[in-house]
Length: 447
Image (cartoon, rainbow, N blue to C red; front, side, top):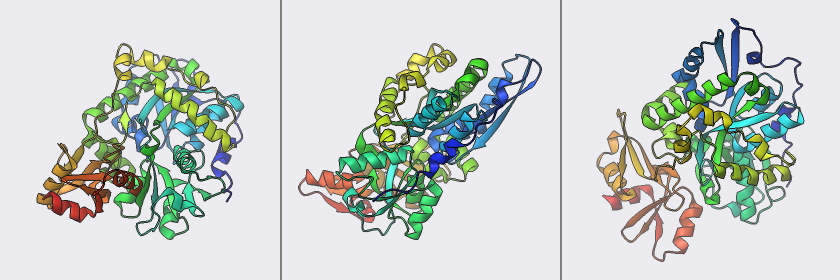
């Protein structure tokens, strides 16, 4: 079956205005407005958006410039990266943050429309691809990617989640253009379609899969980490703005680094701040942004991310969303290196926290970690009424998930959690005697 028209990319073809960005104008003593496009609910961009805004670090660092200007920041919130790119190429947004696939479209549109942009930092990432998940309705009979043949699958075409869907289907021997009916929808629309039964599955990026699972409105069908390919979000800037206001860009990147340090040092308060601003449950924010969350935050542009972008180009080309993209020309780490100074090398070597089982007690500002999922289950069984949320890593991919939403397997004395049926099934195939049990059954066996 053929997928729906690419409505998302239409936003990228808005007419250009004749004027440049606000920040490019104004002589000494003037007020300079810096326009930042971000995605509040795409919570692994929070260090360049939601959290950064709530902490006020960018405004503080701008005021510290003492260059004769007064600075004002105009924060503009969007649901996806496409409208941010449209506004950047129209000269109306100076700095934006978005996922890896939208970043490539940003690069392509910038070059096409003679409004070149540059990738200048990274926000959150997952080295295996766990930021994207395919989910189905809670009562769906679908158990595998093969079951999606002939079904309606909602995603946002041109997004990282669409890239995960395409790659996962191709690896399963399924043609993403012919074997499914792909619905091109905004995340919120796709979530509603799944609930209404007009979509059989939904492939989306952080935080939609975790949110729907937490609300009991979906269950995981496919863990994006099964692809074992890095996914990340990053910060893009108009090239003309970077050249005209390098000190402002440097202030933004310094502020992003400060917000990153705050999130890493205070993961629970950071999750609460983001939750308060976005309306997302803090438990969902923590699933992705917590101490052992699905997303790792570090602003350095690592070579493996550049390599991942180059691999992503073919997916966008096959969908006719871009032609060739000169990734090396798009990536510009000079600004983040200058902003971080000697700390850049240290941040470049950042490694994700090892996967761990974790409990968030009610009323606590800190979580508690456990050596194994079985230890966590024993604790939950004894303190069930005092637990705000419990998280466990997939036994094979390491992707964190809610303990009560995981697929549990018993194998001798082991109790093993999995995000999706596919990873559990793969484990069962190699371990005779292992079997799937319910969460309640896992709690009983642990206690």
